[in-house]
Image (tube, rainbow, N blue to C red):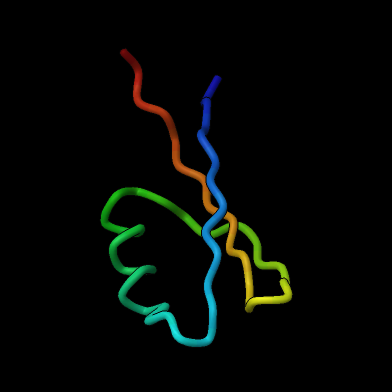
Length: 52
């Protein structure tokens, strides 16, 4: 069975989201959700854990 790890990343209007998204994508993270927050948004990411 596949196993995943998860993380949440806050973004404000001042952040360069495209730069952060590109970096996370290169690290294997896939965005799976977005929620509004008082400071901006929170994006939720997951990536598959490698065996070993």
